[in-house]
Length: 462
Ligand SMILES: [Zn+2]
Image 1 (cartoon, rainbow, N blue to C red):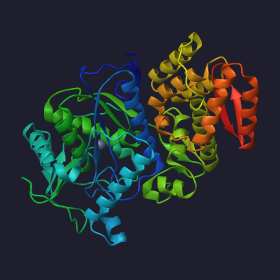
Image 2: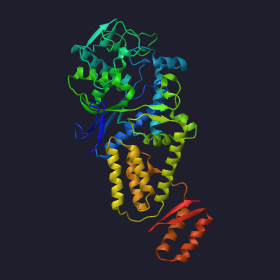
Image 3: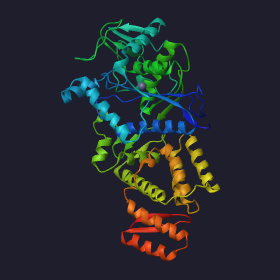
Image 4: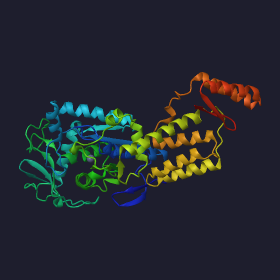
């Protein structure tokens, strides 16, 4: 149990210690479902997936919750802008409910294609309105709110929180000043007066018919399912400054317990070469279905993300994805070849153990997956590591990488070919080289090259 994680809260790499030995509780900010999710967001979801796998690798059980923001919210974090869901519904001539369902399904399909382990529970904001109202009532009772012009605000002068860093919202020129706010850092907990027309989704509340602000759903649902204090909260770095600082403020103000979360793990942006940060608001973004249409597998993108540490900006380009694709294919075919190398008992060697330790150390060093990937290729290219052990190590490494190698089908080598190769192996081991040679020629005629290892063989299609 030596996993170290960079904690945005303390700005340090820390040894991970769970609150309870029974399970590690994780909350991840999920998508707002008004459009397809772009690969920049998926980079963050992949980061959470690698983190979960690293925790499992270190023998932890996990309880993971992810929200789905299916309530119409605003194009800006600071309670201004256009309602994203409503804008999408108008554009696509659908109801906001239909929009939410369609893009939630699309998101779940993406997760499957990317081999991302689903959370234990997806919590939809619209299904937990009561929990949000309860939390706002508690904040009201504890004296952290005020009402202005029909909307309930969180008063940041009563609970100032800049724990995760970030500047003052006032300095951000693109955000219009809200005259109803006592401080510009304050945020809306409940709207009864929408700034927009036609808000379809409305619920009864002690403050009148309306709908919750964006930030409250994560605090309310995380607390409901994970308790008033839990281990890890993940999200993209774009959420850190406003959304996550607000989540902390309102959660700790409501429950009077701190810290709300022990470790905050943030993923860095994906930058589209020549175009800058990928964002849905610009309309210029790449999705998983886009990649698939262009002839890539979603797992090519998964492979690509392994090459850049999650706290570093990742540069995306088609060239980079193409080389990730060929490396991923090479990894798969190498694994299939090694696996088809006949049976035999596994004996771990000192060299193999050394590689395994090297791999584990990289994973446990704040998920240094670029280094772990380099170790993987070093193992595969090392002639001194027996093939059987290579397969064994690769499968263990795959617990982190998540390519589901075990499930790969060796489509390339038919059964009749394998049978010939097995027959040849028997002959060779009995030193019946005449038969072995004959069988090698037969295999060659059928388009297969056979390479001998000490106790087995590797079949390759010519
Ligand atoms: Zn959130």
